[in-house]
Length: 121
Length: 114
Image 1 (cartoon, chains in turn red, green):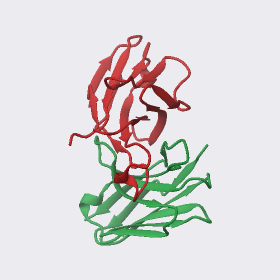
Image 2: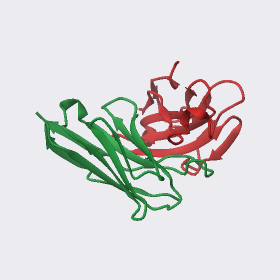
Image 3: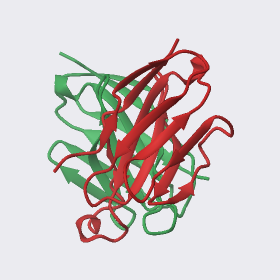
């Protein structure tokens, strides 16, 4: 059972270019979350999506950042006109549908991918 | 929104001793509290979690306690080993109560001294 798959693992972009990060959730998972982690810092929530819906984007910068989770295919986090401050690790996570038997004993256990490390030069 | 505070930011303990990391949360509606361990350059991995209807949960050397009234929860690691060295994050969310995103604490860098 493959885990959360993210690609690319490492991405280098020049200032002003676009970055696209992809995330395929675990099989059977319908919720996707994106978190950003700056060096030596914690995990900052960016956006929470379900298929074709944005549930919470309160952590997304107002400009240049967008996210989608289409009916078919992976979730995409898109950063336009990147700046040096966008350099970070971007982690995608997924969780199963609410109340699915697997997680009734705990909570909305979310599983993280290996991350995409973006470097803006 | 939810705010999770975590202390200490760094912690060093002798191998074999116990380590305790504490977190507080602000939203009384939060009902699910997981702990994640992150090694350098790796993804965060769930190590233990607890629901608000339970006061304590243990899994071998790791235990979590929850005081719902005071809105704080703690991670306890006993008989620490070098491989316990990592950054630990607490988190909180509202399971089955709408928005289920996790809000994380700022992390604790735990170093086990051989």
